[in-house]
Amino acid sequence: MKQATIGIISLGCPRNLVDSQNLLGSFQAKGYKIVDIQKADIGLVNTCSFIEDAKKESIDAILDLVALKKEGRLKKIIVAGCLSQRYKEALLPQLKEVDAFIGTRGLGNEADKSYNLIPRHIAYLKISEGCNHPCTFCVIPKIKGKLQSRAMEALFEEAQGLEAKGISELNIIGQDISHYGLDIYKKARLSLLLRGMCASLKKIHWIRLLYLHPNHVTDGLIDVIANEEKICKYVDVPLQHISSRVLKAMKRQTTTKRILHFLSRLRKKIPGVALRTSLIVGFPGETEKEFKQLLSFVKEQKFERLGVFKYSREEGTPAYEYAGQIPQRLKAERFKALMQLQQRISLEFNRKLIGREFEVLIDGKSSGARYCGRLAIDAPEVDGAVYVSADRELKPGEFVRVKITDAYEYDVAGRHIPLTQEQKKSA
Image (cartoon, rainbow, N blue to C red; front, side, top):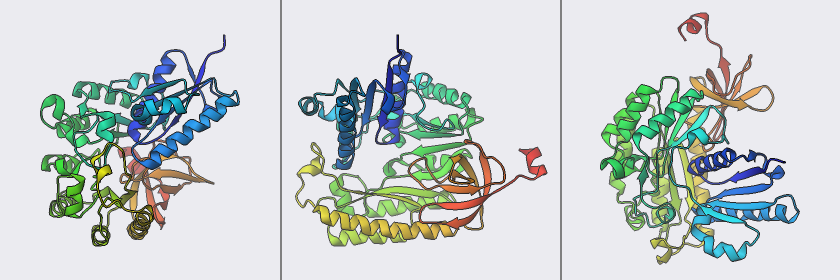
């Protein structure tokens, strides 16, 4: 009897990726063989519906599977994730070719059953799901619910299992990991969790934090990031805007002054820190003056890493009903202006790296004789890369010394520096 096969299209953020790996792992445990989607009996798409563009991408992926099913190349289609959770009743009559809608997954220690969709030297550890914040633009609490943290013991167990598999980099993820533990321990416990992991994980070299709400990054947490060698000096804090009026309309529960003070604390207490943030342009009522304030803020702060989103009007959010909705054309203009500014900032930052030596994690082969890797200030998939020339074979998951020789808008290039005999002995 032929073994049933299943393939996946995984969309959205790293949290979705963790769910996709766990979904595949559960199917594999039931006897299914995991294959490329083009060769599968069952097509599974794990969707995202955070913003309009994500919804369109998810619908397009489903329609691609529908086309394969009509051609007789797929027997069944399963739609999972946020889109399915949010719009199942509306999708059922429109997508009759879909055999099952299964929504989002809950929390659980499933690493032992997970199926890898990413390089084996990288892992994501989801420590919480959902969010307690009332941001008026965000639909996540409606999809995922309130904050739900995992027990610390289960997280230590999973992290130790991942270390046993030989991973080099552990990415701690959640919608807002700075609130970790608030629901089950009645107090945020991220600092305690991180100190325990740094003490117990001997072989994992990098621990990265994704994502921290700026209102809840305490001095204690900053000290942990600054003092624990394993924790990457990379702080991902979505700020969304800098205008106090816009922040109030977003219900971000902060102000211009508080954000500037927070960023100053980070820079002062974590020398050499790389700050990543995300900003929204075109929020309802955003004036030209407020957008120029945002441009000036980015120009002054010179964020090492920056993502920009055009405001997406999402049903069920308070901002959906706000007056002063910004035309798409104007959103696009503001998006372009901010991204062009950040490109110049990023290039300027990268040029300052030329001539310096850094530790680089090798992710794999690039074109020609080059390898692709990352600095500690670059998260997988979302940030830049280091293109490395070397006289020997470099392996995925290996940490090497690299001297930076060239800089581009988002990436850099460099030359592998072999260890001396003395360095090899002490390594």
